Length: 66
Ligand SMILES: [Zn+2]
Image 1 (cartoon, helix red, strand yellow):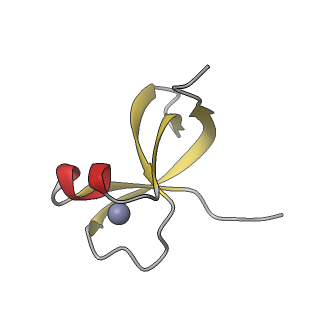
Image 2 (spheres, rainbow, N blue to C red; image 1 turned 30 degrees about the vertical axis):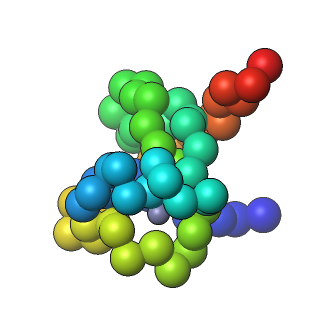
């Protein structure tokens, strides 16, 4: 499965927090830094700032309920 991972800035973070597709994830950037951020699974989400998109190396979903 070759899904391209991208780190994209959210224009309105609250907007994705309230939608049912948002999850918290740790994302590793190409330079090795790991950041906790919102993962929006909605593919047609229009809350993304695609101009700042950069490739991501790794991705771990955080299960908040655990
Ligand atoms: Zn969203």
